[in-house]
Length: 442
Image (cartoon, rainbow, N blue to C red):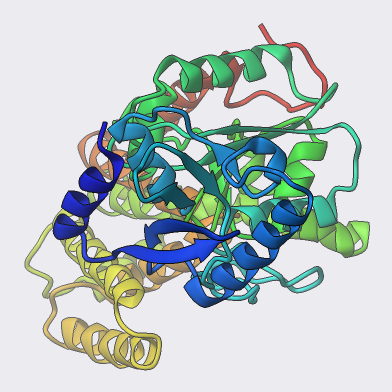
């Protein structure tokens, strides 16, 4: 292969690729790499010093013994492109018959370590992961100083090669879990991982599951705690979160930072989270069941009060509940998408004005607004935004069944949800199981 001609033709297609001619150890060479990834002036200074050291020791410039880089003997076009895409610098002779690759001085492309933006910490370290993979590994090692911590690195993908790191603590993680994860990753070395949906597909998870098979966190102490408990942690380059496998129902209610509080408060927090999940899932369906199908269950005073609040409402209980739930879902989604400077203001004003307007227009009842507001607030008491999102879907099943069969339909829906949760497993580890480090599942 004509290396100089190939790189020159490649430069015509990619203006970020530079070809810089210079002299190292009295030999004319060409440097190739990406301007956006390499700090060329500092890299040149480093190269000149290394080449002078190699020349004084009488070591050939393009030999491994020179200590400058790793020789590439007759590389293919794809190997050259992969080396450059990974941020390496190529040094080759003018004739292109000799070539080495080395790690240059890189540009700073990642933000510094900052406080978490999606998870609040009351007591504990407030450093969060960023987009640099090596920095994230270092943060986990700061929280988990163990000689049993093992790290496996992979670079899967053909068009979008993305470094992926698997961390686990030897002797704590179940053998079946480790073998399944490693087998899935190594079975598809050329599959691209542009996002978490592709990663889920790589690991063999269904796209239509209502339960997330892994939990994400941007807190290093949470990832370190998961490793100590015998879970596996996946880190992806340019992704400021850690993925903890497997996901269990206890992850909804238990957080590592809770252990920084006295035991009484820690248990109180967990009980509140359980009550929050129950309130979010049951309250809308229970309202529809008691109003439209089984009003005889209520005390006469409460039944008359609800009937009075619904006087003039033209829609049945199911329609008005779905209408208000839709508005709440739109409000939550807009809160996420709007800029932080105006998001809380718009949602607060919109919620107050909209809530008052729909009541005065007799579209919904006052009692329903109270119930759905409490249900929405209770939804976010659980740990992890992805868990809160999945829980929001269950109340719609209970809502429809309650409108059809009343309280009986509500109980049937609870049984269906429990049966589904009992059916879900991650690499043979049941979702409802009680996790224990070192336990051999299956």
